[in-house]
Image (spheres, rainbow, N blue to C red):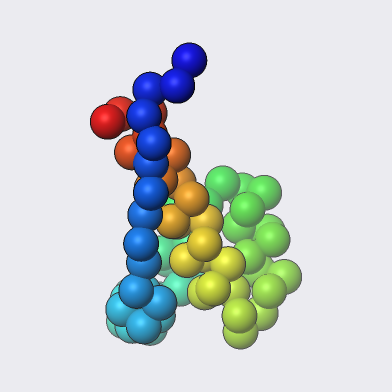
Length: 67
C-alpha cells in the first residue's frame, strides 16, 4: 500500500559543516544501523557523503510513510 511520496533535499555544504562541528562519527551513530555504520567506516574521508545519502533516503522514506 502506497501512503505517499517522500522526497528530501539536502545541502551538502551544510551537512558537512554539521559533521565537522558535532563529529561525523557521533552523527553517524545516531542515523545509521550497525551494518550501515560499518560501511560508513570503510569509506574513510568520504564517509560523510555516504552518511548524507543515508540520511536523505531515510528522511524521504519517513515522509512517504507518514505524509
